[in-house]
Image 1 (cartoon, rainbow, N blue to C red):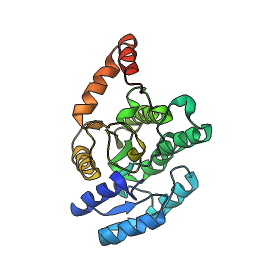
Image 2: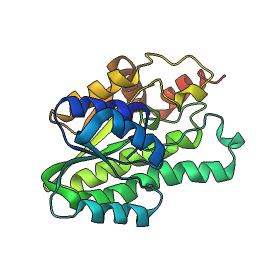
Image 3: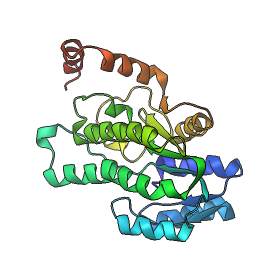
Image 4: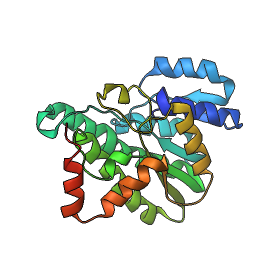
Length: 236
């Protein structure tokens, strides 16, 4: 899911070049069609929406259950920067619906489609590591995705290899909304390469770039009296 642009489209390009056969999904059929023309016969398209369990179930029937897939990954997300108290409640609910509930919907449908030991990949964000100024509901929803992936990792093992991807700042349509300097900003091609290489290795969480993620992990490990004092300095 989320294959029509950004990291998803770049990742599809990487995997096709590696010889993989892909099924690409997103809400936008037009964008998927354009990507399908670029990638050729190695990629099929199957438009659906992570917020619509019915459309996901229909897509699963098209694929066919019984161990057909080696890997299923969702990158679908929406984002709107700003302070929590300034966020429109309807938009906040939509962010949670797409980012967190959508990941749950995807996991429930995708897991039965995997071969034994196949990968179920959920994409969160380093924004989910801790509450940061301007992170608003997006950060909270991504923290939920991290928690969900941790739970699924335990519940579905060893039949399903659940993986968690936590990117830093990537130059996409979502991050174009930011009005602050984004440290260690990556291009989608670089992020896709990091994901592709990382998922071929062992482990649970794949996070990058480490120049950003490791300090944030260290901040998360601090006691609140210290970490909150430091994050307060980031307010604009």
